[in-house]
Length: 315
Image (tube, rainbow, N blue to C red; front, side, top):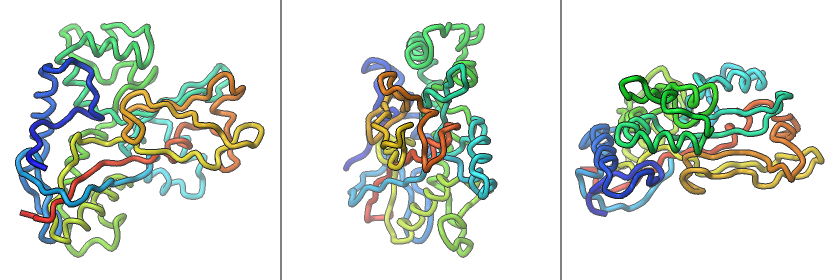
């Protein structure tokens, strides 16, 4: 492949017409987050595909699951406690965040997952605030008003009620961002300290995602390859595993996953909801014999990924 002339928007989503300044501003933002070349481990390097022509020899998906690894470690003998803690957005740190809707009885009826980054939504809000308002009404609730999303000066408020307690559109956790994803991708291995991927943690954040990305990129770099982000960059949901999930009759559940933004295999927003005709709710499903009481029980089965490309020439 030649130079990436323009980094694509997440999931190649087109929220505004071609020619909008959003696309140039997004490319500039991503370009600023990637150094021209960073030595990761061994003789290889992580490079900026918009500044260097690459002869791609392979592609790679760096994968992990969506539920917080630190919570599973902290509550290794009490999974209910882990999942209960995981309902707080502040604990959802694997580049996957979700919002749970319950009926008046407290039973889960819907879980909405997102991998959308705050950087993208802030740019979109700066370029086309009307489009942001329309998307919030479409994705969350028709009752959303402009004053809910923007302050008196017209500045977008990422922590608005419809992206926190009353719904979800994009990440709110500071370490879930394009900056962090591309930052951890350029972390340099501390030679001699790592026994495996989960020991290879360059700082205190012990997320499964960061360890997975480090392990894969460092192992590739050690072989003398150059690695880069695939275009478009960003975390996506590539799959989900609902095998073993049963309905109230003990039968396997049907496919109740709906991709709302992105596409299957590269989803940005996914809703899990049982249609009314099925006669049961999400909270009536059992996973491994346990009823679904928390959104994290589903998140544990969501497969996340960031995609990279490999060039045999490290220079």
